[in-house]
Image 1 (cartoon, rainbow, N blue to C red):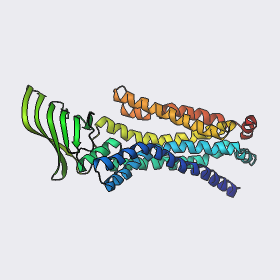
Image 2 (tube, rainbow, N blue to C red):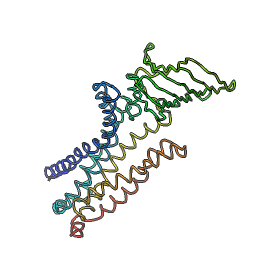
Image 3 (cartoon, rainbow, N blue to C red):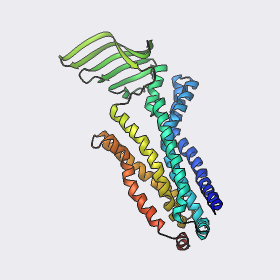
Image 4 (cartoon, helix red, strand yellow):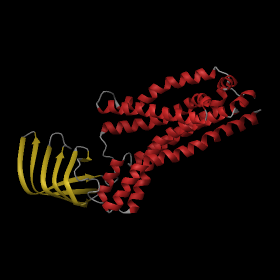
Length: 353
């Protein structure tokens, strides 16, 4: 009997693993498609080394796996139990005395594997400093000046520092430049200039980008009052940590810290809710599992976007915003698992027919 249960657990684990790996590949490819096109544009139009782009592309992967692992877990469990129900394999297991609660054992093991993998990806994403495509743009800015700037667009290349250039003839030259420098709240500056030249340099252990501005006006606001001056030449220095440290604000950093743990817990929730959803969707055929998986992911990430919006407006804390989807999903998981644990699998199968 023990040997049979062991083989059933291994079989169920493999049934979940196959769609999980496929889901990881498809979801990661879809999420990286836009970034791939942008990185390719940097190689073709901005003159960035392909090796540098490939290196930064690899550094981006953990930040995307952080989201795709929980998503793939949801799809994998739903699709696996949808197929087992549709092909009456769960009915056969029920006839052997394997109840609903016993089916959750391999799901629990898989959910812990997915949660630990998500935490690992979160740690790598934080360590490599590749939590967003904006941080990659800043890294490229250090190697090839001007890569993070687009003509005719306001670009925040550092928190509090916004640059606008009407035209960029070459990556290191800007024309008709407007700069807002609010990095220090007690000393903000607004600068406009006819031309701006970007110069990359090294100062000790820090990478520095100098913006050399020509023929412009500077308006400074500080505790001593407002000052307005014209200049023929003015240098604005931007300092980047040599270790590629994050330029994120404290609130955003807090949200990123909490989010990796909330997504790891989401992988567990997705695993358990996937069992009853997969069995229920078996009534609608195999496409029903895919449809339910999509709806579940859309629902969860709609809650995540709502939480991020509330956090940005300071209505809720970064912790609450990161865990909001889990707070909503957890009672739903308990309800569905509790409901199906009281049902007989063969009764569900008979109802489906």
